[in-house]
Amino acid sequence: MSAGTTIDATKAAPAVDAVRTGQRIEDVLDRLATTGDPAARAAAEELVQALMDFYGAGLARMLHLLSTPVGRRTPGDPLAGLLDDELVASLLVLHDLHPEDRTTRIARALDSVRDHELDVVDFDEETGTLRLRSAGGGGGGGCGCAASGTTAQQAAEDALACFAPEVTAVEVQAAGRSGEPTLLQIGSGPGTRAATTAAPAPAKAP
Image (tube, rainbow, N blue to C red):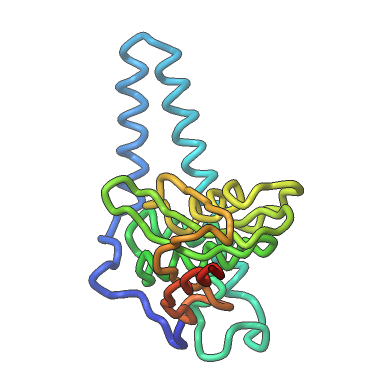
Protein backbone atom coordinates (compact mmCIF):
# COMPACT_ATOMS: atom_id res chain seq x y z
CA MET A 1 0.00 0.00 0.00
CA SER A 2 1.30 3.44 -0.85
CA ALA A 3 2.09 5.85 1.96
CA GLY A 4 -0.60 8.21 3.10
CA THR A 5 -3.63 6.17 2.07
CA THR A 6 -6.84 8.01 2.97
CA ILE A 7 -10.47 7.02 3.06
CA ASP A 8 -12.58 8.55 0.29
CA ALA A 9 -14.75 11.24 1.86
CA THR A 10 -17.61 10.25 -0.46
CA LYS A 11 -17.80 6.95 1.41
CA ALA A 12 -18.23 8.59 4.81
CA ALA A 13 -21.03 7.00 6.82
CA PRO A 14 -24.21 9.09 7.15
CA ALA A 15 -24.83 10.86 10.43
CA VAL A 16 -26.69 8.70 12.96
CA ASP A 17 -28.41 9.85 16.14
CA ALA A 18 -27.30 7.35 18.79
CA VAL A 19 -30.25 8.09 21.10
CA ARG A 20 -32.84 7.67 18.35
CA THR A 21 -31.17 4.51 17.11
CA GLY A 22 -31.23 3.00 20.59
CA GLN A 23 -34.88 3.91 20.96
CA ARG A 24 -35.66 2.37 17.58
CA ILE A 25 -34.08 -0.91 18.68
CA GLU A 26 -36.13 -0.87 21.90
CA ASP A 27 -39.31 -0.20 19.91
CA VAL A 28 -38.63 -3.18 17.66
CA LEU A 29 -38.02 -5.44 20.66
CA ASP A 30 -41.23 -4.19 22.28
CA ARG A 31 -43.22 -4.95 19.13
CA LEU A 32 -41.80 -8.46 19.12
CA ALA A 33 -42.80 -8.85 22.76
CA THR A 34 -46.42 -7.97 21.92
CA THR A 35 -46.59 -10.87 19.48
CA GLY A 36 -46.65 -13.24 22.43
CA ASP A 37 -43.74 -15.25 21.06
CA PRO A 38 -40.99 -15.26 23.70
CA ALA A 39 -38.68 -17.21 21.40
CA ALA A 40 -38.83 -14.46 18.77
CA ARG A 41 -37.97 -11.75 21.30
CA ALA A 42 -35.16 -13.86 22.76
CA ALA A 43 -33.72 -14.42 19.29
CA ALA A 44 -33.92 -10.69 18.52
CA GLU A 45 -32.20 -9.80 21.80
CA GLU A 46 -29.49 -12.35 21.07
CA LEU A 47 -28.98 -10.84 17.61
CA VAL A 48 -28.70 -7.32 19.03
CA GLN A 49 -26.18 -8.51 21.62
CA ALA A 50 -24.12 -10.33 19.00
CA LEU A 51 -23.97 -7.20 16.85
CA MET A 52 -23.03 -5.05 19.85
CA ASP A 53 -20.24 -7.49 20.76
CA PHE A 54 -18.97 -7.50 17.17
CA TYR A 55 -18.89 -3.74 16.74
CA GLY A 56 -17.66 -3.23 20.28
CA ALA A 57 -14.71 -5.50 19.59
CA GLY A 58 -14.01 -3.61 16.37
CA LEU A 59 -14.04 -0.23 18.11
CA ALA A 60 -11.82 -1.53 20.90
CA ARG A 61 -9.38 -2.89 18.32
CA MET A 62 -9.28 0.44 16.49
CA LEU A 63 -8.55 2.32 19.72
CA HIS A 64 -5.79 -0.14 20.54
CA LEU A 65 -4.17 0.21 17.13
CA LEU A 66 -4.47 4.00 17.10
CA SER A 67 -2.91 4.20 20.56
CA THR A 68 0.19 2.34 19.35
CA PRO A 69 3.29 4.54 19.83
CA VAL A 70 4.05 6.54 16.69
CA GLY A 71 7.51 4.97 16.42
CA ARG A 72 5.96 1.52 15.92
CA ARG A 73 3.56 2.53 13.14
CA THR A 74 4.25 2.45 9.41
CA PRO A 75 5.98 5.76 8.59
CA GLY A 76 3.71 8.22 6.79
CA ASP A 77 0.68 5.94 6.82
CA PRO A 78 -1.56 6.16 9.89
CA LEU A 79 -4.06 3.71 8.36
CA ALA A 80 -1.58 0.88 7.79
CA GLY A 81 -2.17 -0.79 11.14
CA LEU A 82 -5.95 -0.60 10.74
CA LEU A 83 -5.94 -2.05 7.22
CA ASP A 84 -3.66 -4.91 8.25
CA ASP A 85 -6.01 -5.96 11.06
CA GLU A 86 -8.54 -8.62 10.01
CA LEU A 87 -11.36 -7.45 12.31
CA VAL A 88 -11.07 -3.78 11.39
CA ALA A 89 -10.65 -4.59 7.70
CA SER A 90 -13.76 -6.77 7.72
CA LEU A 91 -15.80 -3.93 9.27
CA LEU A 92 -14.53 -1.44 6.69
CA VAL A 93 -15.34 -3.80 3.82
CA LEU A 94 -18.77 -4.58 5.28
CA HIS A 95 -19.71 -0.88 5.15
CA ASP A 96 -17.92 -0.12 1.87
CA LEU A 97 -15.43 2.13 3.67
CA HIS A 98 -12.24 0.23 2.85
CA PRO A 99 -9.95 2.53 0.80
CA GLU A 100 -8.27 -0.31 -1.13
CA ASP A 101 -9.66 -1.99 -4.23
CA ARG A 102 -10.40 -5.71 -4.41
CA THR A 103 -7.11 -6.65 -6.08
CA THR A 104 -5.08 -4.96 -3.35
CA ARG A 105 -7.19 -6.52 -0.60
CA ILE A 106 -6.75 -9.98 -2.12
CA ALA A 107 -2.99 -9.40 -2.17
CA ARG A 108 -3.10 -8.27 1.46
CA ALA A 109 -5.03 -11.40 2.43
CA LEU A 110 -2.60 -13.73 0.67
CA ASP A 111 0.35 -11.90 2.23
CA SER A 112 -1.08 -12.85 5.64
CA VAL A 113 -0.93 -16.56 4.72
CA ARG A 114 2.70 -16.82 5.74
CA ASP A 115 3.21 -20.59 5.44
CA HIS A 116 1.99 -20.92 1.86
CA GLU A 117 3.26 -19.33 -1.34
CA LEU A 118 0.17 -18.43 -3.34
CA ASP A 119 -0.05 -16.65 -6.70
CA VAL A 120 -3.27 -15.35 -8.23
CA VAL A 121 -4.17 -17.01 -11.53
CA ASP A 122 -7.47 -15.24 -12.16
CA PHE A 123 -10.73 -14.12 -10.59
CA ASP A 124 -14.14 -15.00 -12.02
CA GLU A 125 -16.37 -11.94 -11.56
CA GLU A 126 -19.55 -13.91 -12.27
CA THR A 127 -19.03 -16.76 -9.79
CA GLY A 128 -16.73 -15.04 -7.29
CA THR A 129 -14.16 -17.81 -7.71
CA LEU A 130 -10.50 -16.98 -7.12
CA ARG A 131 -8.02 -19.36 -8.71
CA LEU A 132 -4.62 -19.63 -7.07
CA ARG A 133 -1.35 -21.38 -7.80
CA SER A 134 0.41 -22.92 -4.81
CA ALA A 135 4.14 -23.50 -4.58
CA GLY A 136 3.55 -25.80 -1.60
CA GLY A 137 4.31 -25.22 2.07
CA GLY A 138 3.28 -26.20 5.53
CA GLY A 139 0.35 -25.34 7.75
CA GLY A 140 -0.56 -21.94 9.02
CA GLY A 141 -3.72 -19.92 8.79
CA GLY A 142 -4.35 -16.51 7.37
CA CYS A 143 -6.26 -13.72 9.05
CA GLY A 144 -3.94 -13.83 12.02
CA CYS A 145 -5.14 -17.28 13.06
CA ALA A 146 -2.55 -19.98 13.57
CA ALA A 147 -3.80 -23.29 12.24
CA SER A 148 -1.35 -26.15 12.33
CA GLY A 149 -1.80 -28.48 9.38
CA THR A 150 -4.07 -26.05 7.54
CA THR A 151 -4.09 -26.58 3.77
CA ALA A 152 -3.24 -23.75 1.40
CA GLN A 153 -6.88 -23.53 0.31
CA GLN A 154 -8.21 -23.37 3.87
CA ALA A 155 -5.64 -20.76 4.87
CA ALA A 156 -6.49 -18.63 1.83
CA GLU A 157 -10.24 -18.92 2.47
CA ASP A 158 -9.79 -17.81 6.10
CA ALA A 159 -7.77 -14.75 5.09
CA LEU A 160 -9.99 -13.78 2.17
CA ALA A 161 -13.11 -13.94 4.34
CA CYS A 162 -11.64 -11.05 6.33
CA PHE A 163 -10.14 -8.90 3.60
CA ALA A 164 -12.05 -9.78 0.41
CA PRO A 165 -15.51 -11.29 1.07
CA GLU A 166 -16.29 -10.83 -2.63
CA VAL A 167 -14.32 -14.04 -3.09
CA THR A 168 -16.92 -16.75 -2.49
CA ALA A 169 -14.86 -19.76 -3.63
CA VAL A 170 -11.16 -20.60 -3.82
CA GLU A 171 -9.49 -23.08 -6.16
CA VAL A 172 -5.81 -23.93 -5.66
CA GLN A 173 -3.74 -25.68 -8.30
CA ALA A 174 -0.32 -27.20 -7.65
CA ALA A 175 2.80 -25.61 -9.05
CA GLY A 176 4.45 -27.03 -12.14
CA ARG A 177 1.26 -27.75 -14.08
CA SER A 178 1.73 -27.23 -17.80
CA GLY A 179 -0.26 -24.70 -19.74
CA GLU A 180 -0.70 -22.25 -16.83
CA PRO A 181 -2.35 -18.93 -17.64
CA THR A 182 -0.90 -15.51 -16.90
CA LEU A 183 -0.12 -15.17 -13.19
CA LEU A 184 -0.43 -12.12 -10.97
CA GLN A 185 2.58 -12.51 -8.71
CA ILE A 186 2.05 -11.52 -5.09
CA GLY A 187 5.09 -9.70 -3.72
CA SER A 188 6.10 -8.84 -0.15
CA GLY A 189 3.12 -6.59 0.36
CA PRO A 190 0.10 -4.95 -1.30
CA GLY A 191 1.13 -2.74 -4.17
CA THR A 192 4.27 -4.76 -5.01
CA ARG A 193 2.68 -7.13 -7.51
CA ALA A 194 3.83 -7.57 -11.10
CA ALA A 195 2.00 -9.50 -13.81
CA THR A 196 4.10 -12.13 -15.51
CA THR A 197 3.43 -14.92 -17.96
CA ALA A 198 4.38 -18.48 -17.10
CA ALA A 199 7.30 -19.69 -19.16
CA PRO A 200 6.40 -22.36 -21.77
CA ALA A 201 7.49 -25.91 -21.09
CA PRO A 202 10.82 -26.82 -22.76
CA ALA A 203 10.54 -28.83 -25.98
CA LYS A 204 11.28 -32.50 -25.72
CA ALA A 205 14.36 -33.83 -27.48
CA PRO A 206 13.57 -35.86 -30.64
